Image 1 (cartoon, rainbow, N blue to C red):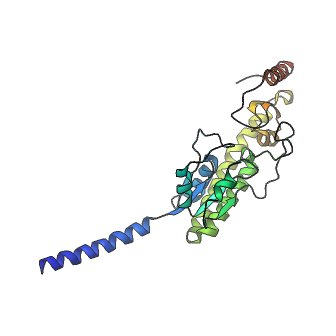
Image 2 (tube, one colour):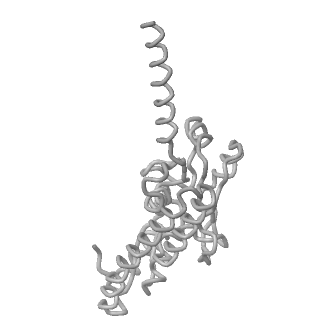
Image 3 (tube, rainbow, N blue to C red):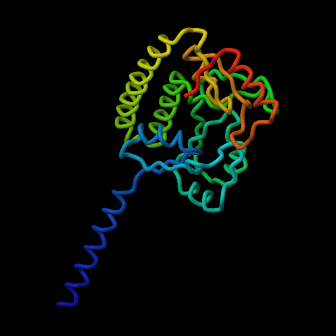
Length: 238
Protein backbone atom coordinates (compact mmCIF):
# COMPACT_ATOMS: atom_id res chain seq x y z
CA UNK A 1 0.00 0.00 0.00
CA UNK A 2 2.80 2.37 0.95
CA UNK A 3 4.58 1.66 -2.33
CA UNK A 4 1.35 2.26 -4.25
CA UNK A 5 0.90 5.64 -2.55
CA UNK A 6 4.45 6.63 -3.47
CA UNK A 7 3.87 5.70 -7.10
CA UNK A 8 0.62 7.66 -7.21
CA UNK A 9 2.32 10.65 -5.59
CA UNK A 10 5.09 10.45 -8.19
CA UNK A 11 2.58 10.40 -11.02
CA UNK A 12 0.71 13.40 -9.61
CA UNK A 13 3.95 15.33 -9.02
CA UNK A 14 5.11 14.61 -12.57
CA UNK A 15 1.79 15.82 -13.94
CA UNK A 16 2.03 19.10 -12.04
CA UNK A 17 5.66 19.56 -13.05
CA UNK A 18 4.86 18.97 -16.71
CA UNK A 19 2.00 21.45 -16.54
CA UNK A 20 4.20 24.06 -14.89
CA UNK A 21 6.94 23.58 -17.48
CA UNK A 22 4.45 23.89 -20.32
CA UNK A 23 2.94 27.03 -18.81
CA UNK A 24 6.37 28.57 -18.38
CA UNK A 25 7.30 28.15 -22.03
CA UNK A 26 7.29 31.46 -23.87
CA UNK A 27 6.86 32.32 -27.52
CA UNK A 28 10.36 32.20 -29.01
CA UNK A 29 11.57 34.97 -31.30
CA UNK A 30 14.98 35.19 -32.93
CA UNK A 31 16.35 38.22 -34.78
CA UNK A 32 19.19 38.68 -37.23
CA UNK A 33 21.01 41.25 -35.08
CA UNK A 34 20.91 42.93 -31.71
CA UNK A 35 19.21 46.23 -32.62
CA UNK A 36 16.09 44.40 -33.76
CA UNK A 37 16.34 42.16 -30.70
CA UNK A 38 16.36 45.20 -28.41
CA UNK A 39 13.29 46.61 -30.13
CA UNK A 40 11.51 43.26 -30.03
CA UNK A 41 12.25 42.86 -26.32
CA UNK A 42 10.62 46.22 -25.62
CA UNK A 43 7.51 45.17 -27.52
CA UNK A 44 7.41 41.60 -26.21
CA UNK A 45 8.06 42.35 -22.55
CA UNK A 46 7.70 39.17 -20.52
CA UNK A 47 5.38 37.54 -23.03
CA UNK A 48 8.09 36.25 -25.38
CA UNK A 49 11.69 35.12 -25.32
CA UNK A 50 13.81 37.17 -27.74
CA UNK A 51 17.41 36.55 -28.80
CA UNK A 52 19.74 37.59 -31.62
CA UNK A 53 21.66 35.38 -34.02
CA UNK A 54 24.60 37.78 -34.14
CA UNK A 55 26.35 39.07 -31.03
CA UNK A 56 26.70 42.78 -30.14
CA UNK A 57 30.25 43.01 -31.53
CA UNK A 58 29.63 40.97 -34.68
CA UNK A 59 29.97 42.35 -38.22
CA UNK A 60 26.40 42.12 -39.48
CA UNK A 61 26.91 42.50 -43.23
CA UNK A 62 29.14 39.48 -43.85
CA UNK A 63 28.40 37.38 -40.78
CA UNK A 64 29.12 33.65 -41.04
CA UNK A 65 26.40 31.70 -39.18
CA UNK A 66 27.49 28.69 -37.14
CA UNK A 67 25.74 25.31 -36.88
CA UNK A 68 24.70 26.43 -33.40
CA UNK A 69 22.99 29.49 -34.87
CA UNK A 70 21.01 27.31 -37.26
CA UNK A 71 19.99 24.91 -34.51
CA UNK A 72 18.87 27.77 -32.26
CA UNK A 73 16.87 29.39 -35.06
CA UNK A 74 15.11 26.12 -35.89
CA UNK A 75 13.69 26.16 -32.39
CA UNK A 76 12.20 29.62 -32.88
CA UNK A 77 8.57 30.39 -33.69
CA UNK A 78 9.32 33.67 -35.47
CA UNK A 79 12.37 35.23 -37.15
CA UNK A 80 12.70 39.00 -37.57
CA UNK A 81 15.10 40.39 -40.17
CA UNK A 82 16.07 43.86 -41.37
CA UNK A 83 16.24 43.28 -45.11
CA UNK A 84 17.51 46.02 -47.46
CA UNK A 85 20.55 43.83 -48.21
CA UNK A 86 21.91 44.27 -44.68
CA UNK A 87 22.21 40.58 -43.85
CA UNK A 88 23.81 39.27 -47.04
CA UNK A 89 24.05 35.84 -45.40
CA UNK A 90 20.41 35.53 -44.33
CA UNK A 91 18.81 34.11 -47.49
CA UNK A 92 21.01 31.02 -47.45
CA UNK A 93 20.66 30.78 -43.67
CA UNK A 94 16.86 30.84 -43.87
CA UNK A 95 16.86 27.99 -46.38
CA UNK A 96 17.77 25.74 -43.44
CA UNK A 97 14.63 26.70 -41.55
CA UNK A 98 11.51 24.56 -41.64
CA UNK A 99 8.10 26.07 -40.95
CA UNK A 100 9.55 29.09 -39.13
CA UNK A 101 7.85 32.31 -40.32
CA UNK A 102 10.06 35.28 -41.17
CA UNK A 103 9.07 38.95 -41.11
CA UNK A 104 11.09 41.83 -42.58
CA UNK A 105 10.73 44.73 -40.16
CA UNK A 106 11.61 47.49 -42.66
CA UNK A 107 8.40 46.98 -44.65
CA UNK A 108 6.85 50.37 -45.39
CA UNK A 109 10.08 52.35 -45.05
CA UNK A 110 11.20 54.48 -48.01
CA UNK A 111 14.92 53.70 -48.33
CA UNK A 112 17.71 56.15 -49.00
CA UNK A 113 19.99 55.01 -51.79
CA UNK A 114 23.73 54.42 -51.67
CA UNK A 115 25.34 56.60 -54.33
CA UNK A 116 28.94 55.38 -54.41
CA UNK A 117 31.20 52.39 -53.92
CA UNK A 118 30.44 48.71 -54.63
CA UNK A 119 26.91 49.05 -53.20
CA UNK A 120 25.99 51.95 -55.49
CA UNK A 121 22.29 51.84 -56.34
CA UNK A 122 21.29 49.64 -53.42
CA UNK A 123 19.29 50.88 -50.41
CA UNK A 124 21.11 52.10 -47.34
CA UNK A 125 20.14 49.35 -44.87
CA UNK A 126 20.68 51.34 -41.67
CA UNK A 127 17.08 52.56 -41.62
CA UNK A 128 16.71 52.14 -37.84
CA UNK A 129 18.97 55.17 -37.36
CA UNK A 130 15.96 57.35 -38.15
CA UNK A 131 13.63 57.89 -35.17
CA UNK A 132 10.69 58.11 -37.58
CA UNK A 133 11.72 54.82 -39.16
CA UNK A 134 12.18 53.38 -35.69
CA UNK A 135 8.47 53.83 -35.10
CA UNK A 136 7.78 51.81 -38.25
CA UNK A 137 10.10 49.07 -37.00
CA UNK A 138 8.10 48.94 -33.77
CA UNK A 139 4.80 48.73 -35.64
CA UNK A 140 6.07 45.89 -37.83
CA UNK A 141 7.44 43.99 -34.84
CA UNK A 142 4.16 44.45 -32.97
CA UNK A 143 2.11 43.24 -35.94
CA UNK A 144 4.33 40.18 -36.37
CA UNK A 145 4.05 39.23 -32.71
CA UNK A 146 0.28 39.75 -32.70
CA UNK A 147 -0.09 37.62 -35.84
CA UNK A 148 2.00 34.68 -34.69
CA UNK A 149 1.28 34.83 -30.96
CA UNK A 150 -2.29 36.16 -30.75
CA UNK A 151 -2.71 34.94 -27.16
CA UNK A 152 -0.53 37.86 -26.04
CA UNK A 153 -1.81 40.42 -28.55
CA UNK A 154 -2.99 42.92 -25.93
CA UNK A 155 0.40 42.88 -24.22
CA UNK A 156 2.23 43.48 -27.49
CA UNK A 157 -0.05 46.34 -28.49
CA UNK A 158 0.28 48.03 -25.11
CA UNK A 159 4.06 47.65 -24.95
CA UNK A 160 4.47 48.94 -28.49
CA UNK A 161 2.55 52.14 -27.72
CA UNK A 162 4.59 52.77 -24.57
CA UNK A 163 7.83 52.14 -26.47
CA UNK A 164 6.85 54.49 -29.30
CA UNK A 165 6.10 57.22 -26.79
CA UNK A 166 9.55 56.73 -25.28
CA UNK A 167 11.23 56.98 -28.69
CA UNK A 168 9.34 60.17 -29.52
CA UNK A 169 10.11 61.71 -26.14
CA UNK A 170 13.81 60.93 -26.53
CA UNK A 171 14.25 62.44 -29.99
CA UNK A 172 12.46 65.74 -29.42
CA UNK A 173 15.11 67.20 -27.05
CA UNK A 174 17.78 66.18 -29.57
CA UNK A 175 16.01 68.05 -32.35
CA UNK A 176 15.85 71.12 -30.12
CA UNK A 177 19.58 70.92 -29.39
CA UNK A 178 20.45 70.61 -33.08
CA UNK A 179 18.37 73.68 -33.89
CA UNK A 180 20.60 75.68 -31.53
CA UNK A 181 23.67 74.82 -33.61
CA UNK A 182 24.46 77.34 -36.39
CA UNK A 183 23.32 75.88 -39.69
CA UNK A 184 26.79 75.96 -41.25
CA UNK A 185 28.07 73.80 -38.38
CA UNK A 186 25.43 71.10 -38.63
CA UNK A 187 27.64 68.26 -39.80
CA UNK A 188 27.79 64.58 -38.93
CA UNK A 189 31.17 62.96 -39.60
CA UNK A 190 31.71 59.20 -39.22
CA UNK A 191 33.75 56.34 -40.65
CA UNK A 192 30.80 54.56 -42.28
CA UNK A 193 27.77 56.16 -43.90
CA UNK A 194 25.49 54.40 -41.45
CA UNK A 195 23.90 57.58 -40.11
CA UNK A 196 22.35 58.93 -43.31
CA UNK A 197 18.79 58.52 -42.05
CA UNK A 198 19.56 60.29 -38.77
CA UNK A 199 21.38 63.08 -40.60
CA UNK A 200 18.37 63.53 -42.88
CA UNK A 201 15.91 63.67 -39.99
CA UNK A 202 17.97 66.20 -38.06
CA UNK A 203 18.96 68.34 -41.03
CA UNK A 204 22.66 67.50 -40.80
CA UNK A 205 25.15 67.39 -43.66
CA UNK A 206 26.90 64.04 -43.70
CA UNK A 207 30.56 63.21 -44.26
CA UNK A 208 32.08 59.72 -44.04
CA UNK A 209 35.02 57.59 -45.19
CA UNK A 210 33.02 54.85 -46.93
CA UNK A 211 29.29 54.33 -47.57
CA UNK A 212 28.95 50.84 -46.09
CA UNK A 213 30.92 47.91 -44.63
CA UNK A 214 31.99 48.30 -41.02
CA UNK A 215 35.04 46.03 -41.41
CA UNK A 216 36.67 48.29 -43.97
CA UNK A 217 39.60 50.60 -43.29
CA UNK A 218 39.79 54.00 -44.92
CA UNK A 219 42.17 54.42 -47.82
CA UNK A 220 44.62 57.35 -47.75
CA UNK A 221 42.47 59.07 -50.37
CA UNK A 222 39.29 58.66 -48.32
CA UNK A 223 40.94 59.90 -45.16
CA UNK A 224 42.47 62.89 -46.94
CA UNK A 225 39.10 63.84 -48.44
CA UNK A 226 37.40 63.84 -45.04
CA UNK A 227 40.25 65.74 -43.36
CA UNK A 228 40.13 68.41 -46.07
CA UNK A 229 36.38 68.84 -45.62
CA UNK A 230 36.66 69.01 -41.83
CA UNK A 231 39.30 71.73 -42.12
CA UNK A 232 37.45 73.60 -44.86
CA UNK A 233 34.20 73.84 -42.91
CA UNK A 234 35.81 74.03 -39.44
CA UNK A 235 33.82 71.05 -38.24
CA UNK A 236 34.31 70.55 -34.48
CA UNK A 237 35.09 67.08 -33.13
CA UNK A 238 33.61 65.37 -30.09
